[in-house]
Image (cartoon, rainbow, N blue to C red):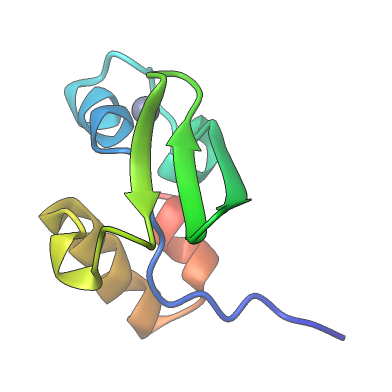
Length: 88
Ligand SMILES: [Zn+2]
């Protein structure tokens, strides 16, 4: 059986800002995310449907460009079940 081994979630910065500001209501990044993930000619792209903008592109981004906000979720994920990082 395959398990979720994700250590670092990739989220749209604007979506995270909306969660933090309360615009989205009480929700988690996992529940609020509306991302499309797909293959491109040169890698993988993550696209936010809500904001119609690119979140991540493996051909041009690197992990040093991941927003600081995601590092917080990463830290929580490392402490326990990765889904816990999405529940607060
Ligand atoms: Zn977004």
